Image (cartoon, rainbow, N blue to C red):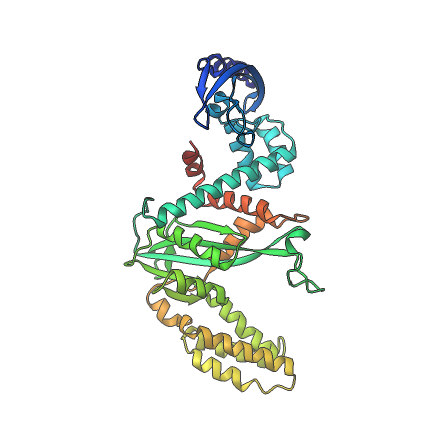
Amino acid sequence: MHKLGSVLLEQLLNADHGGHSGPRIACRGGHQAEFIDYRTKQVQTILGAVRLRRAYYHCGECPADAGHGLIPKDQELDVVGTSFSPGLRRLMARVGAREAFDLARQDLAELAGVVVPTKAVERVTEAVGVAAEAANDAERVAIRTGTAPALAARSRLYVEMDGTGVPAVPTETQGRPGKAADGTAKTREAKLGCVFTQVHFDAEGWPVRDPESTTYVGAIETAEQFGPRLHAEAVRRGLTPATTTIVLGDGAPWIWNRADEHFPGAVQIVDLYHAREHLEAVGRLALGSGTAAAQAWVAARRAELDDGDVDVIIAEIRKLSAVSDPHRQDELRKEAEYFETNKFRMCYKYFRGRGFFVGSGVVEAGCKTVIGHRLKQSGMRWTVAGANAVIALRCRLLSNRWEDLWRSAA
């Protein structure tokens, strides 16, 4: 069936006499390029290989760096600089974004009868990812200038952000401090953000995330670069001054700096479960890991945390700071400062009374599904450019915006 289809496709594609448009056509520089001859090119398609007959034009007036040759048919069929058809590139990018490149090659052969090298899957996936990021950039410009359509505003818009390490090749981590035993870095941090809406509550009064409302953005970039990316996505999703916006995250300062800059007036909530982890850390530091005293202390503080009595927690931590070990004293001081800095983001009784989510589990799960499942498998090492290309594609896929990418390309 594929072989027959490729024969028919080849005849169809060559039915226009190679895209010949007369003895001369306008070139990119506004000159007149002259027809020279017909040239053939083999293109791999979903149905198999086809040979294209294309009219070749030459312009002697264009500078050498602009290119003298012009093949209109390659532009028409979107095969300039590639031997893979747009449809096949779409398949290669989709499977390459979902799984390791060699597994993607195997699945293409098994499921679609398409035989291509592993390296070709990698190159095409990354090239399409670069195009996806270019489309993202163009969309952000349109959003910033007010020329892009936005979705209808919902009553509550949640914004979450987090970071996760991506294993990188040595050239990408050279000179960067990290958590390895020798103090060097083996990873680069990818920032991930998600936006979702919430209108309804379950029978017990807990908030329920709107089905299929979660969209993702992400890249290996600085927090300052990431902020506008996430803000543009929130605007696209319906952020307005009248929207109740809730920013959720752990206690990392970069998150709240971005929230202050891009989401002024938003409700800021520290993930409750991160706050509880900090209480457990205090118990281990001051009273010993797993001891009855530590468990009793943490249980009492958790009840206070749920009630939003953070000042009480801070006072109780400072009572414990008189331990003999200077290192533990310093760590306890840092824990007290963590709660002091974030106490207005820990009013959990009030937040729950208003029906807000108090956990950032959506973005934490996103760090695993969007980034971890594809970029953090055993033996993987990425360049920043390659990782960002795949992250761009995975954000599109898992945000249900894959079709938007190809629609905009068309």
